[in-house]
Each structure stands twice: as C-alpha cells, then as structure tokens.
Length: 260
Image (cartoon, rainbow, N blue to C red; front, side):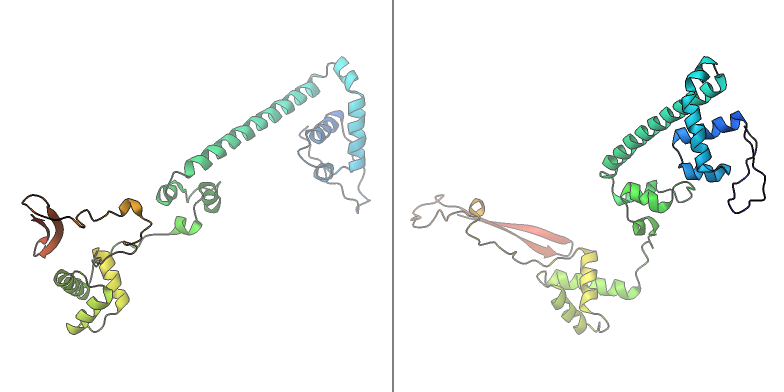
C-alpha cells in the first residue's frame, strides 16, 4: 500500500500504462468513499483517470457481499478505521462549537485590558488577527504599547501652581478666565486648550449653576414655598437653614447658617 504511484499525464502517451494491485485499488476507492476530496483531486493525486476510479468504485460496491463472504479483514479494518475517524472528527467539531459559544459569552464580560492579556503573540498556530477576532478585540488595541507617564517640566509645574492659586481665589473661574489671569502673570506661551487640559488633569471644575434647574415638569424636585402668606408672630415658629462652603489655605470648609 506504500508503493509510490506515478502521476497521470494525459500529454505523455509514451509512458507505459501502470497496473494496480487489489490493495492499491481498495485504498483509492476508500478515499473516494470518505468524500474528503473530490474525485478529480484523488485522480490527480494518484495519477489515475476519474473514469477508471468510478469503475473501480462501482465494482467495489457490487462485490461488497462477496467481500463479506470472504471475510476480507483488511478492507473491513479500513472501513472501521474510516468510520471511527469520522466519528472522532464529528465529536471534535461539536466540542469546538461549544468552546466558541462559551468564549463569545465570556469575552463580553472582559475589558479590553483583560482581553489583551490573553493575546499570544508567539503562537504559531493562531495568528494575532484571528485571536483578536475570537476575543472581539481591535487589532490596534492588541499592538498598542503605553508610553508611560513622563515627568512634568518645570514650566508645567509653574503653570499648574498658578492655575491652582487662581482657582483658590476665584472658584467660579473657567478655562477662559484662568487663561486671561495667566497672561497677566506673564505666561504668554500658553493656549486655552492647554489650560483646559491642565484643569482636567488637576480635576478643577468651576462652580456654577447647572442647567434645567427650574423646569416645572420635574415635580419630584419642585417644592412649594410653605411660608407664603404665613404670619410669623412668635419665637421658634419658623426656622431657616442654608449651607455653603468657603475656601481656605488647606482646602474647603462648610458653613451652615440657621435663622430663627
């Protein structure tokens, strides 16, 4: 069965016609029955015409009862191996389907950082592109390398200190007003975007009234004025309270006022 078969060449008529023994014919017919390759592909691999292989197949199927009567153990063993191999492949495909479905459910709960840790760059069997497709991770994220945090320059430190002092004096100042104050302090080579970025890095947000505070449709947040048309006649009849915060050198402190 290990005999090397010559390629069939239609253009070379000078070659002698090769004869095949029963074992070789059975091997070729079994490959056809496995249906793992097309008839033309098998014919090309063994150098046999498709018509001849079809005839061998027909003879094999017609003579199968005779083969069983003769108890041809070799053919029977090949058939058993074929069906066992086919069953094993079906089981593997089913297990792979289960694994892929589990992977799809698991990857949804992972962040990109966790998915990136699962990438195996040195894997020779699965490419990085295919790994990213399985994990649902963009390839740009898989190849991205963080630059790290660089040390700030002295100019940046001076500007941030000035921004912090301006914000302490005027907590309602936004990016534009702080930029104007910086220009008054001879920080000429700085733009508004840079000031805004420094404020975001420092967590500085100006204090101002937010939008939509007076919408009447927000009934659960709208409270009626209970003292309207009420005559205040004696002590402890009405109490008023308010709260605010004041800036200090060490931060902010809360100020609460109670009025009788």
